[in-house]
Amino acid sequence: MTQTYLDTVRLIERLHRHFLDVLRTELRRLGIEDINAVQALLLYNIGDNEVVIRDLKDRGYYHGSNVSYNIKALTESGYLTQERSPHDRRSVRLRLTDKGLALCAAIRTLQDELATTLDSDTQGPDQLSLTLNTLQRLERTWTDFVQYGRVRSR
Figure 1: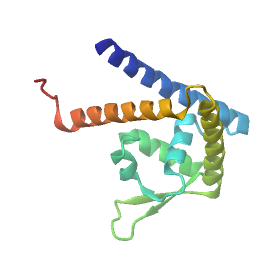
Figure 2: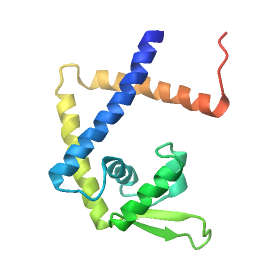
Figure 3: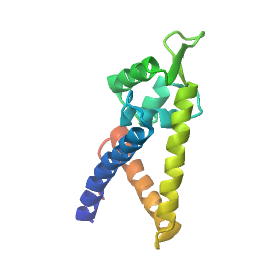
């Protein structure tokens, strides 16, 4: 089990890098040069929602100054708008502009195409559902470790 776990962790890291490569390739295909793949993923995670920066951090998508830098760059490039809350001046709401929404739609189309390709695989959606379940268990284990510390074996 230990080797399988270690291989899974390495695969997750590689998959993340590969997914950013997929986004980078799509940005290039679309002729978008003013943002990078990480910023495109940030836009995609915001999507049609209006979110507070803290929500992005709390959901575990982004950490610290990294998110602030990317939000500033996306705002300056015209993909995002920022609006301070009238009730709490420390709270800033983010919303995609039409330019940001158009990019999200293009990424959604790409995701649909990739999902269709994966669905046509002979192993099909059942295998993908099992994989998702396993990855969710792994995420829960890691989240619990970060929040509660080391779990003692019995």
